[in-house]
Structure formats: C-alpha cells, structure tokens
Length: 378
Image (cartoon, rainbow, N blue to C red; front, side, top):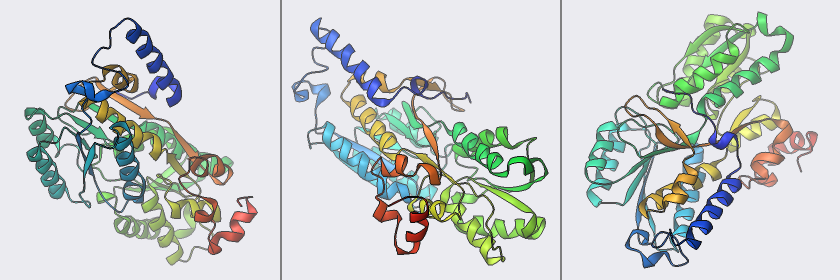
C-alpha cells in the first residue's frame, strides 16, 4: 500500500474550490461545459437532483459517526441537490454481517452511489464488486475498502499515528529513552489500524521501550480495558510511563483501568477523534491529547464527491480527488485526504470550538468548570 500524501500538500479546501471555480469559468466561456455546469443543474439528465446516496457507517461506539458525520453528510447532499437528493443511511453497529446485508439492500434498491465506511476492508470487497456489476459507484469513507472502489475520502492515517507517537515522546522529554510504554492499537480488520501503528512506531521505536502492545477487536473500549489490566499486571502500574491509545473510546477505557488499579497520577495517554468526553479529559489533564480530524471537511468532501460523481460534474470531482492511493486490490484510487492536528489544552479554542464542533458550554460543564478556567477556556 502506498503512503498517501495530504491533498495538495496541505492546500486549504477553499483554495481548491477557487481553483476549480476558475477552471469552470474558463471552460464555460469556451463552451466546454455545456450540460455539465450551470445555474440549473436539472437541465441535464446527468445533473438531476433527485438522486439517492447510500451511506453506510460502521458503529455507534465511535461518537462522531452519529453526532457529526451522518448529519453533516446529509445536509451537504441536500444543499448540493437543492433539497431533492436523499441519503439512505444505515449503521452496522459493529457487525460485519449486518453491514454486508445493508450494503446488498442498497444495491437491490438501486441507489445512485454508495459511500461506505467498512468495518472489515477485505470482507466488504465482494459487496463492492456486486455494486460495480450493477453500475453503482462506491466511495470508501474514512477506511480504505478493498474491491473496485471509485474513490477514497479520509485523512492521512499514517500522519495520525505520527502525531500521536510524537506527542508521547515530547511528553516524556529527557526520560523517554528509559521509559516503558503500552500500545493499545485498533482493530486489525480496519485497514487504518496498520497505518496508525506504522506512523506511531516511526516516532516511538528507538526512542522509548514498548513494553506491551495489543490489538483491539472492533475498537471495543471493553476489550481495551481488559487489555490494559493485563498490561498493568505485566509491566507494573508504576512502570507505565505512557499509553499509546489509537482512539478516544479506548483512551477512556485505558484511563478507567489505570484509576481502578490505583493510579493517582495518569501518565500521558493519546487518543483520536476529539470526542467530547475526550476533549473534557484533555481539559482536566487526564488525557494528554487527541487527534482532531475535521468531521466537517471529511463528511462534506465525501458528500460532494458522491453528488459530483452521480451528476458527472467531472471538474469539481477531480478538484477534490487530488491524491492517489493503493489498496491491496486496486491501484491509483482517486483520493481526498484531509489534514489532521494534535488537540491539546493549548489549542481547543482554535480547533473544535472554532470549527463549531463544540461550544465552550458543551465542554465546560460544572464538573470541568475549574479546569476550563485554569486554561482560559470560558
């Protein structure tokens, strides 16, 4: 699998949109976009607004999917189709057989396109093939599905791991070389897990000692907590200098296990997804950091790519698909990769609050009021 580069070397989304608009204006003046662009997209059969976009998300344990990804995606589809497009949505609730059944139901309904965040990237491949055979394009979302997908929308997942690993090394400072850490990796069936791990190890190896590491089936917090208890027994509570946790759900479980074992001071624990409870743990100091991946950008880009694909709006589609990525079954898949940022106490205002993900009131509940005041969050 090739290492993806961030879209346009961190070129902002608005810059890409301006470039696409400029190209569209130029070609329109030359008469090259007749039937592709225009103020009334309903004038062309390819640009009909009454489309149905299938959206398949993997679970409800990861708070962002129900709270952000789906609503943002649905709103963008409605905006792009003047309120005439619909989203056929299903959540697999962490069950691969359920997701396969949901996928096949969408193929049977003859939706116009399917956007899928695959629970198991390899297991979904036969369903992707069935969609392709039925003439239904498939866009992989967040996780890189195998099979003949048309595009991929996600983040630079190796960079996510790098950001997490770098945070641990920086937190440990001069003590890093003599420190023992525990790695709590994600679900091995999720292709992103290998990318997160690869990025993290690139920062951690030869800088700290990895005492224990675990894979976490289905990203389950319960599994992570059980594994953390094993790590505490194997390494010793007082010897664990930091914990690499691949996401926030597991980070919360890791911290619970440390507390139950008697830890009075929590060592640096990483996370990912900027869940509200994780941001609050960052405020209170229980969680060292989380990786903020803009739900707004990712879900919006995916909705735009889906609509543009169905409506044959090739210029807008290509403007988004600036990158290429390989899967185990396909090469040179058009991709949109959204940048990521390490969220700490120092930049909460500039990230999740500035983007409208949470308000200060959401974060600074009475339990966290004093901690918020201490970092100037009010």
